[in-house]
Image 1 (cartoon, helix red, strand yellow):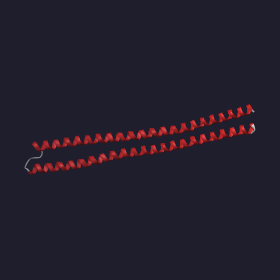
Image 2 (cartoon, helix red, strand yellow; image 1 turned 30 degrees about the vertical axis):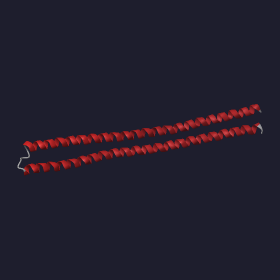
Image 3 (cartoon, one colour; image 1 turned 60 degrees about the horizontal axis):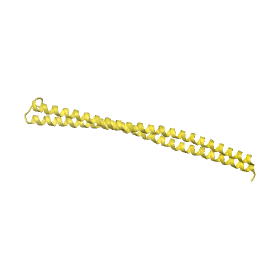
Image 4 (tube, one colour; image 1 turned 120 degrees about the vertical axis):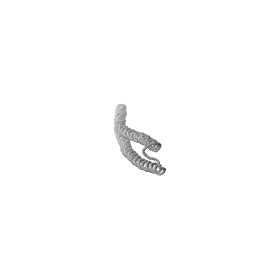
Length: 167
């Protein structure tokens, strides 16, 4: 085989390797970008979930206070049925205790909901940060494969030169 054919073959091999490396970088970037889109979608879903948690809490509090109002009416009716005045003495103390417990329950419900919302929103933030990392990894994959492609071209050029020089 003549040195010209060997040198051209060496160059062709280098170009093919460089082309394959660039395609591999593009494929890696596409995979990272796809993952990024999925993570963004997950973050959006978590934001919606946080809003749903807030709405559910507001609904639960409204239901709780509807039930509390029914309890107050029933308690007041029971005291009146026994001939007690519901606006003073023991009936008033019972009503005040019930109101204090209802307020305490609302604070507890609000705290638990705020904690759940915060945790859900934090998960959304983490998903967005992971999406940004995936985008960065995609860009890095392209750069890395371009660099490797350049190295492959220079290596094949060097080998082709050595073939020429030794011929």
